[in-house]
Image (cartoon, rainbow, N blue to C red; front, side, top):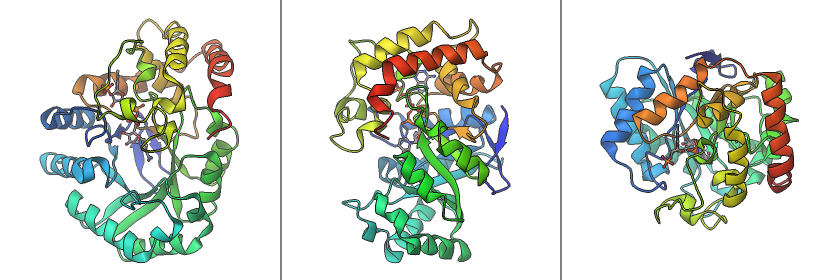
Amino acid sequence: MKYRELGRTGWKVSEISFGAWAIGGAWGNVDDQESLAALHAALDGGVNFFDTADVYGDGHSERLLAKLKKERQETFYITTKAGRRLPQQTPGGYSRENLTAWVERSLRNLETDVIDLLQLHCPHPDVYYRPEVFGILDDLAKAGKIRYYGVSVEKVEEALKAIEFPGVQTVQIIFNIFRQRPRELFFPEAKRRKVGILARVPLASGMLSGKFTRDSKFEKDDHRHFNRHGAAFDRGETFAGVDYETGLRAVEKLKLLAPKNATPAQLALRWILEFPAVTCAIPGAKRPAQVAENIAASDLKPMSRAALKKIDVIYNTDIKPLVHQYW
Ligand SMILES: NC(=O)c1ccc[n+]([C@@H]2O[C@H](COP(=O)([O-])OP(=O)(O)OC[C@H]3O[C@@H](n4cnc5c(N)ncnc54)[C@H](OP(=O)(O)O)[C@@H]3O)[C@@H](O)[C@H]2O)c1
């Protein structure tokens, strides 16, 4: 495992880290024993950074991470998110009272006195025009409730606006072979300001692993079943906003580019690591075998210019018109 500096925090985090949404909920059936085994496998493989949120399984994901902390001795970082407990996303919802209550709840779930990194969880875009919200986060840091803060965003424009606030250490954004716009304007600007980038949905909800077919079935409580058209949250969070059939066709072409010693999932993760502005990819995983496969992407050789070019061609022809200007 290789490590990269996270913003101006002074932390070095694993370039393949762990996304803990699926082990909380909204991804069909999960088994806590298996989820915990996946978390242990991540630590065994050198992962030292875990991304969760107060709403993943209504706190279940945070509580599993608290359990992991009790079962292991080594130092690792947990970042959680706040804001999605609001019944509706309104800028006014990001009040001192609400933010404080969400932070206190996460502290209890995580069984800790201080949150390593708190991210606003895809808030209403007007939040980025309310400096007082970032003032509240500064106060929470001064009070010792959080060490650092960052944001998770849907759109590049939100990311660019967010990093105008000097306290923002990290931006979490969808970045994968199917979602390439962040590399254009946002990456150079984030790098210039030393803002860490957490690349989420790196496998396009598992699509880029190449395991799905036209006949794949998803359980009713799996967002890949219920959120394909954005019924519950932004449609871009499911298969990165690419419609299922188009995704399958593009993945068939991508599979041919995986080197002999690598799987399509590893190719997808290695591609993300080619961008030095990215601090880490945070693939979700439900099982230890998935974790082992994902973290091994850090040991792969850098990709050839020719392979990168071929991926650009697939993106430009098959995917770009469907997603590029939406997020
Ligand atoms: N708004 C936000 O802030 C937000 C939104 C989305 C995600 N996130 C964060 O980003 C993380 C990653 O995104 P994501 O979990 O949505 O999507 P993802 O990482 O692209 O996909 C994860 C899913 O792909 C499957 N998978 C993982 N490794 C695999 C492998 N090696 N081979 C085959 N299948 C594999 C697993 O599901 P199955 O085994 O069921 O197929 C897993 O749950 C989340 O866990 C969360 O921490 C944040």
